[in-house]
Image (cartoon, rainbow, N blue to C red; front, side, top):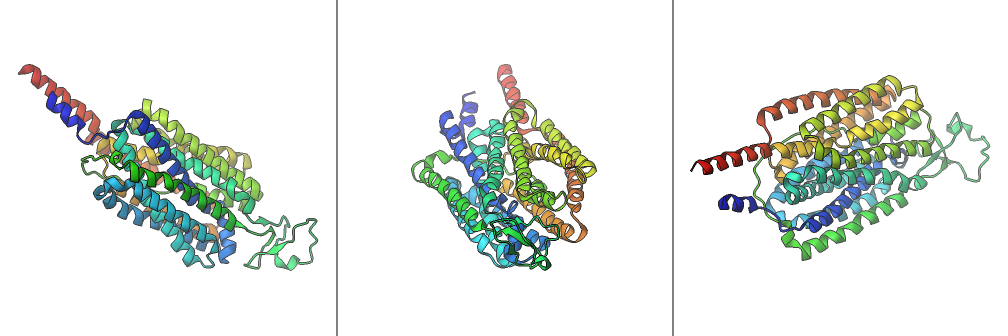
Length: 443
């Protein structure tokens, strides 16, 4: 029994409960920062089209650069975290600063290629942060990590619904003229704001885009948090802990952020929402998203992860079906189902991580496979939706959500079957302990 107790201590961190909670809070704030600098392209999508003199297809491809960078960051981050586990805090700090710099430069891009590169750079930093941060959470909380993992990703939802509010005063405002074209140059506007012709020469704006200021504000906020992790690295390095972890892998399909990227544009283009109402709808999605992840703290504690992930997936699938049926023509349905979509989609990623960690202990390399799946999915979805949205109509946004739901259902069923056969590692550990205790009693 003494030997078993010693084995249980192998790889345990020296953190007290208070230190764990404080470290988790700062990591949650890190995920708030991720929400700020990654979801900044959602509310500013139309402004980026103006800045680059392009269209939805080209800007969507540029935004997909974030997923490409995320893939690269996942590939780099896994080996880095496994080999340099004591420097996870430093990795997070440096990547926050790098992401902040890339964010500040984005609105000054005059062409789509440079925009793609900068977003890919930010995505690379995000990938490394994701692996380092989640490794810390899994390390310090171990078998109790499901709740903290959901709270960690709750931070992303918080940042994502804050960012439209920060940016809204700086977004371009489209003229309400029904014929919003340059030929209506003689039109008299009862306004003290001079109308501005968009760079593509086809649209008239009451207010110019000033997203440079919004991006600068976000960059400063993101960079400010890095100071905390430099302090952790310099003065609390021993708290990083060492832990021998078995290899394992898992894959997830990206696409959960597809809704957040396009819902504002869809509401304005299809349902003729004003810019403010479009931003409000986008905010509603991210508030529901944040609530869904926060509730994961409690649902993850009382509902088995294998059951929880099924509830979340089927809830999201039913929502996309209802969106396809009702939201094309009904503003009310769009408002209601947007909240439902955010709520059910939100916990899928942390639940996927927790599901994987339930079956095999996650190394940085294992988390890499999860993030690579998300990156590939996110990149492919944005490329496809940008093309379809531009050339086949606005309703392709809803059609692709249905396709995403079908793929998600299929993969979840496969995961459930494989997981059922494999069994949980904590269940196996309890079984081994019981067997050892019986053997000791017999002796």
